[in-house]
Image (cartoon, rainbow, N blue to C red; front, side, top):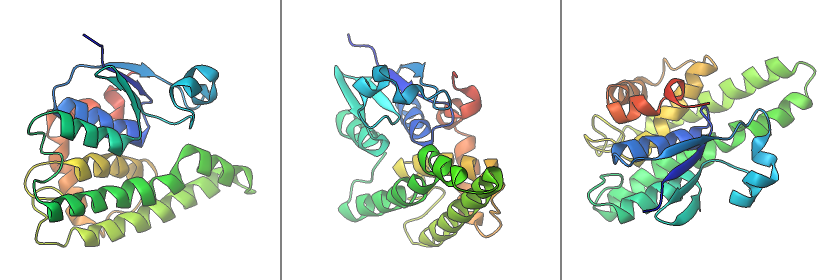
Length: 212
């Protein structure tokens, strides 16, 4: 039987999403850390896994996959009753839209490569990074909060069970707190994050519990 291996970085938001999904499935996997700060993701060994030089990379079912949301959707399609996506088309569209709002709009402008470039072109790199993170994470999450004002929202982003949108939200809230983003205008998503923190699959995926 093929071993499931997650090439991972403890603070990678995209990897964090996949860790949550695997834990929700009780899918055993081995974590292989790829140190982004040491630029291990730019070395030939990792570029052979993913020419983009990004994380995560998941070896599962004898295949190799990249892109966190594509991985989560693969798991939803190949495992029974995951609940990662709703059964109805409108519900699936909403969950994908919420997930994309974080994974495709907030996350890309705040990833390591972009922020490193911002720092290198600023007089005070640390101040520029802090301001950049607070602006784009903060504005993105305020908009996400408004998306939660919807009849389909419940105890979680969509309904009363966690799914793909929650897998995206929790790592982004972790990042927001890391950069001291003001979340006072986001009570709904803060409450969802707290509910998720009480679920073992989310708790075990937390960066503080991830091999480095």
